Amino acid sequence: MSFMGFLLSAMALAAGVGVVWSRNPLYSAFCLIVNLLSMAGLYSVLDAHFLAVAQVVVYAGAIMVLVLFVLMLLNLKAESGRKLGVVRPLAAFAIGSWIVATAYPSVVDNFKKVSIHELQENLWRSEGTVRAIGEELYGRYIVQFELSSLVLLIGIVGAVMLSKRKQPAIGPRPGGLGGKA
Amino acid sequence: MTSMVAYIGVSLVLFTLGAIGVCIRRNAIVVFMCIEMMLNAVNLAFVAFSKLQGNLDGQVAVFFVMVIAAAESAVGLAIIISVFRSIVSVETTDAAQLKW
Image: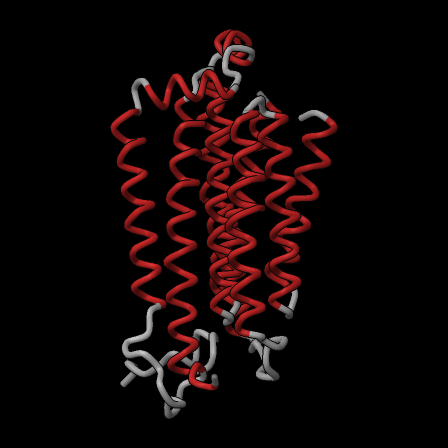
């Protein structure tokens, strides 16, 4: 791992810890932005240039703006006084160490099966430039590419339907928050 | 090769952090962000394996994951907002109307 890879990995991991640990959801969101940006740097280190740009634009740009927008809209305070308890963090730690302990040995084993020769040959061959990704997307993956536009359309329609009010609010609604205007 | 193992390790730890966050956090938006982090960890593994194998299929898969994540974030946040409208809270423990 190069120096940049090491630095960016450390940043991503530290920001990931920040997402889980900070009490204020706003700080979590900012930590997640740092995490996503350093992941974009990691993609760039791994020669996936198009994905690095797409990560910055789509994740750190669009999705995180949406999340921050919702956070500001709901105007949440820091997590309320109720304690986290003992059971949940312990269970989470158990699940986490179980995942790592199960997955890591199998990953390393699988790496041992790949021959070094093949690797040296492969390492320079895959460069994810816009052109290369575009040729893949519009060549072999054209059906999936078109279907993904359908998924986005369904997502838009679903989001609009979910956030639409059932009836137009004329007076203040009983119980709900929305009817103040 | 060792460097690729390191990238997979980073991806694994990030995924685990996301899973832990989903387990212990109660704020629905933070849970949502932890899910995004898990998706990103898998994306990193895809890119590392794509580099290792020398073809671009992994990167195309990451592209599709990004598309799904965008759609998911729009729908998920809309669900969170509509839950907030009905129970005035985004804590996952407060949305317990169906509990017997």
